[in-house]
Length: 373
Ligand code: FNR
Image (cartoon, rainbow, N blue to C red; front, side):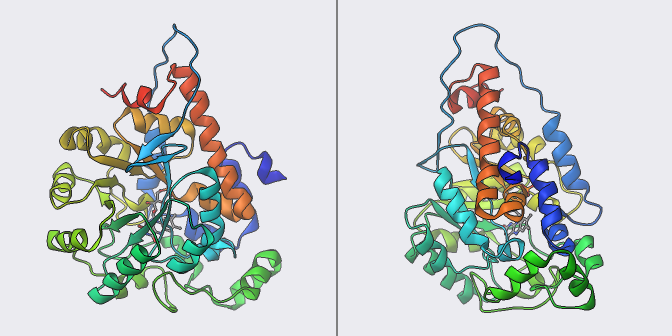
């Protein structure tokens, strides 16, 4: 009931913090090193000003939009997040169901804790996207791309900002391993979050979208598995291996954006991994106008990092984005209340965008994007 009454992402975040072990909450909520990038992103978004028109008819509101050729109810995509069954035992299945019922695309991560095929079987008709990290073992990448295609995933997203694993100091301090291990500390925590621990220990052990099992810290894992160097030749290979839309996630320069589009990508995601990698990364909302100017109106541009409200979505649309991706906001919902919590998080974006559009006299998403400078 508390989740249903939450009317901001911050409220869901607070409920999430109470309901999950400290190390799990911190893994989700935290970012790299001093967490400067994340804090700047949130502040920058909140400082974008919107200018309402004061005359004219009050429009009927239609928040739907086309993302890569398919209709979505909002200009919003659920970003890939790893280890989601750690946040809540229903994990990716609960998130995918909530996205499906809201009419939004959901991206399964390479580090997801449900297999590509399980998520597909749960939501056959949903707009499912798959996120790839390029593996040191190229055959492993090839196999994942192949499986995603066969299981009906529509869009492939390659993440390119993970040359080294992020240094998440909260994880280091909490001694977090994947999967969480039973230690004196976690047992102590178990007494405070019995519900979470009961569910965690009585559902099947964490396995991954892309591999059988693994144990280590959140910093070690990418270093061991993923190729630190991604080249344009890799993109050319991916382009030839994947017939559907292809997005490159982690773009921060206009010339990189241009280069990947020229290599055959359909669009880019301006992202710094939610501040979880380089903690001196530029603020994505500030990069957006320049990258839009460089790519022109046709390329698909998504942006993420720090989006917490419908007004934040409107800000990105007016500055050049086609849609926004969110990570932590839906994970707070998931930790707070499983599938219903994710649904609540999505409703908060929906109602916030609607009221912002009403203020702005914008009846449709094109009315918002049309106001681009
Ligand atoms: C992520 N992110 C991420 N990105 C990716 O490409 N593959 C992944 O496996 C993950 N895993 C992951 C786990 C967790 C817990 C978080 C919070 C994030 C980054 C994610 O896709 C997205 O870029 C950010 O989450 C966006 O910032 P916000 O919305 O969380 O502020």
